[in-house]
Amino acid sequence: MALTILATGDIHIGKKSSGIKHNTEESATKYTWSRIVDYAIKSKVDILALTGDIIDQDNRYFEAIGPLQAGFEKLKQANISVFMVAGNHDFDVLPQLVNSERYNNVHLLGAKGKWETKVFSKNSEQLQLVGWSFPSRHVSEDPLLKFNPAIISPNITTIGLVHGDVDTLNSKYAPISLNNFLNTSVDAWILGHIHKPQILRSSTPIVYYPGSPHALSAKEQGVHGPILLTVQPQRDIVIEEIPLSPVRYETLSVDITDKNNEEEVRNAITSRLYEDAHSKDADLENVSYLVYDVVLIGNHSNIREVEMWVKFINDYELEISTTETLVLVRKTELDIQPQVTNMEELAKESSPAGVLAKWIIALQNGESTEAAKRLLQKWGSVHSSITQASTYQPLRTTDRFEPEQQQDKKQYILNECKRILTELISQQEQ
Ligand SMILES: [Mn+2]
Image (cartoon, rainbow, N blue to C red; front, side, top):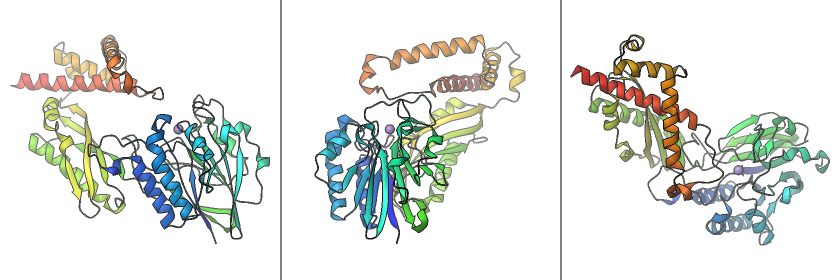
């Protein structure tokens, strides 16, 4: 007989997926939590393992506590044990919840940042779990440095649970060096914190980020869900992904070269959306919302017009009848090249079009010119005066860090230059 463990983390109960204007229960993470509980019961797993950030923040306590308790209760009735560790978002709340001692089937491992093991037994089979919980919101030291393999019984299959940032040296969220997992006598490490599913090591010890089971934003693309571990005799572990996320985000590129009017551009977009969504329909059984970011690529003679033509793309809605999935578009991005026969030639001219061509070439080659520097500076000061305005203070969170902002800035200016250039050229032609 094999033992089975359903594992997940980063559910962030209390949050909703962004970019979905429909206000239905499927867009909230508490829905996915109850879906995970139901799946565990239906599949008769032995253990549900949770790797932290189950609750979004302390301030979500009252929203999260009801669904979480209801889930624990159902699992208790079904004789399923829960083993979990706390992450940076719920370092405070999870221990409080377990201290209430209402659920003898629920175990928090490694409270206050002290490694802890517990043995799970069923019939004649045994499994050992070892874990470490966040003691505070920020932890700058690798928790594995304090791991002592002596706390592990060597003859039992062992699953490790920890929340942290693997191979991110300066992280405030438990930076862990991948190498430190190697001599831990643990068979599989299941991690939390990173929302993108990732297998960091596929042979013993397995090191696996299951990712968030509910895709929360367009940054969390593709299939999401918990993972199912089956521990076979001889300590052989088989892992399967279970696609339970009711939301799926994707990016779709649409080439609009030679699509010269509104009808052709719109047709190109909607037929690509239709084809792409239907090509995925075998995987959409649990998906209520398939949300696209559409990127328009290719060459066009009037970028301004294209912008106008796709302005109301957010209203797009297609239902796939077999799975009842709604296909939506969150936004369009324009990555279109101006239709200029020879950009290099044009750049030699002193006309406004020539100057723009020169800037575009420089920005695309990553060259720094005086004009580009001035534009970037100006963009920066306008942008920061907006984002730092007190009006937006409540939207700001301390955990957000935006490394891609510098890149956004350049992309924005580059796109504006291209747009204006096509406008100039089309005016000259009229
Ligand atoms: Mn986290």
